View 1 (tube, each protein chain N blue to C red):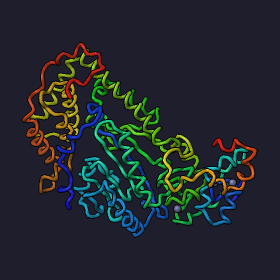
View 2: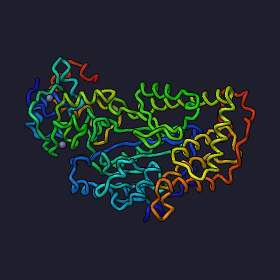
View 3: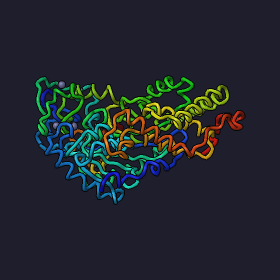
View 4: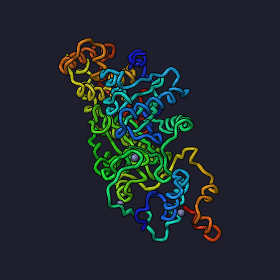
Length: 372
Length: 134
Ligand SMILES: [Zn+2]
Ligand SMILES: [Zn+2]
Ligand SMILES: [Zn+2]
């Protein structure tokens, strides 16, 4: 099956909702596992990588969760298809660069994705909408326990699950949440918060992982350490940090509405104006303006706009998603034109934002979800 | 100091030697959990004294390149690495040096079974309850 036929539409995949969805876009748990007796992918010869891939792939495919899954070797995917998987956060950029001997298995609802021969033999991730790290880990833990019956994992009592890089040994778990934090950015508090979170042993990154900017005011927060702490403790600690970040974001939003409502209205109004009228627009500008529209929607400034529309536009205006509907290879400039056309079309049905806040001045900030 | 017998970094000198003689590395891995019990009295199990560069016998990874690559070649490399180097790498990036959390079923051995495998525990167990507090 072709990848494009398998993947759900961006609109459908963005409709999934979870707890704390106003601020937390999604929760992800990823674990690394390696098979005893094989070199790690970065050191293994091609033949060994292929042998591992061929041995492991059917085991993954046989999981109940992987009924009617998409499964392929990376060399069968075009660079466009790989890029689409990256833009949907299903594989890493590093994995997209790999070819024969590496592959992926993706379940029907795209919540479970297993990368084979990325930096480790297996990198399995489970994504859930909103804040649901515990639920995501519970599911992935069960899947992993079933896999260990068929795959002899490389494990040491002192070092835990052995990985190519010692920064991942132990639980080999990366737990992360994707947060939308426009309030903290506008209030100029984001650097303080990021610093405080880093001191607690968490990493804060941009939308597309390591080394990427926080485009669209979207931040990924994840644990940094994997050895010396159980999965549950790691998740509990991250949950605590996230709860605090959510609270700070809510407070920042509430105080903005109270003290500087015009600034918010101005930002949201301009964002709508540009996005629904531009004829050429970059990906970066799009993301940042969409962030303001999402914020405006959270404040109830857009009547009848579903929040998932903004999420959908975040992804479908990415380069590969724009390219896939067009035959010829687009230059960056051509993409900016097509992106603007696409946005004007999508936003035609969204009416302009209200120019004042509804009765929110009496709110104390403890109930900051005016329209869900 | 264990000199060059320190093949099994997780183990004390005597057990490392035993492990090599037994040539049963996976059986001996049952002992890893007991490491700290053995080596509480000032013997540093983890200090490795290997100077010569060599390769992992399993995957031929040049172990002296661990520092510069930041990665190893295969799971077995961890046992053959210079343990000082490994430890300092872990100290830089990790919270602690001992695994907490999930253990695969095949590694979940009842305590009695582990103890049978270690000579020192057998001889000391009756008069030293402290041993079990690890
Ligand atoms: Zn011993
Ligand atoms: Zn050494
Ligand atoms: Zn090796």
